[in-house]
Image (tube, rainbow, N blue to C red; front, side):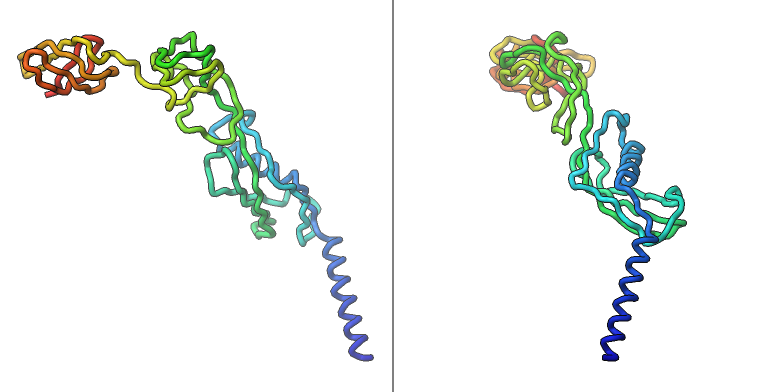
Amino acid sequence: MKCLIIAFLGFLLVTGASSSGAMTGTVVKAEMIQSAIADYVHRLAPLEPAAIRIEYTARMNDITLPLPLKNLNDLEFQVSSTADTFIGNMTFLVKISHLGRLIREERVTARLEQLQEVVVTNRALPKDAVITEADVKIVQKWVRRQPTGQLDNVQEAIGKRVIASIRANTELRSSLLAEQVIVKKGRNVRIVLHAGPMLISAVGLSEQDGTMGEIIKVKNISSSRIIFARVINDSLVQVDF
């Protein structure tokens, strides 16, 4: 009987302490944590705040801190993350402190989107078409990951040729483009070689297509020798010596 009374009193003490702790705790709204994360992102991301969207991938609940506070402004929120790209899936560590003392840590996962400028085609383009200013435009697009080879300036596309047929409103990437062919295979070209004050030249035949500045194989017509020369323009190649 004595043991039963002691156990009952112990139960009352634990229950009373738990109830008292719950009553005297401080509730931190999920919105406060989200606001701290947003401030962190907008402060460090290299974009305007309006160009970043934050979507929390799991429901965030209010949390209760085990201490009574009259003013929530006394709380300090320190946010950090392992990634600094601020795009795609990210995990944030939120440390909540009071007067320099750590009270609680929360891990929050979110998906970030960035509003970026991309280059798209105005019309359908056939294979090997050379892009002009009228063929492309800039549009804004929300993206969740950074595409490889994305173009954000029309000048990166103008003058290039497309390596395959492309539909209108296609987002251009570097993998879809190639330098414009200046010298075509089988074309007669002038071969020049600068040797100090001397200039040696000969007539040659291009053995392959070549873009501006590219080194291609050329046959010297007089000697039938194959040499390598750099494309200068559509009828001139230069041997680097």
